[in-house]
Length: 268
Image 1 (cartoon, rainbow, N blue to C red):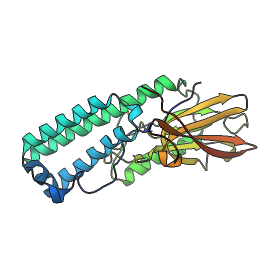
Image 2: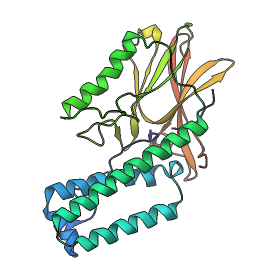
Image 3: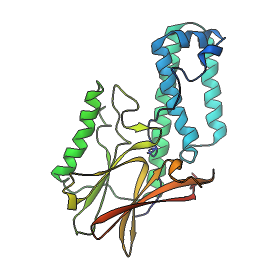
Image 4: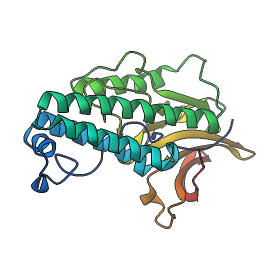
């Protein structure tokens, strides 16, 4: 198994929310007809915020996506389409809905491609322990509480399996990035990445480590297997713009430790 990146991102990700206001721009300075209409309509304003959150992932985790130029061109094309709508709310909502769907697809595909490239880990095919299935079902419950259901084909998290705690029994890394909740684009992912659970057999899978990040990977070494996760750069305050921050989860004597390190961001 090879190592590398991370939800989010998951990654990143998958679906992230940008910090900010009701709309992604300052409504007090809105002048164009489309901008004024977005600010006045709550539903359209919410769509604008959701779209901004998805696009925020592109700037937050640029190594997961294509060239900056292409992203900029797509954004400009959307703004041009929105401008053509003027104050037509129906037109504006359709423009936002189409843009959100495209962003979700592009981000999801890019993250999966990067994961496949960097993290050559075969899928988990062995029977999943009951304790792990209980954790997985918790995501469906989380979505239900938000008033939605998990979308068909996007109702199972990503799974990695290896003996992390050294007891000879398989442990599991559960990545929520592939999940999609019908009523909330950001149910499982946020600014810091996507929800990741690390459940070990010595704890009977009952008290998983909870983290936010993207693209969890397993790293094998003579000293044992560790789990690595791309995490928010705030965990590596000395990281440069060309570096990514990585969390490494290791077990020694049955106890886990987590360390953070800034490393060059891999190129797509």
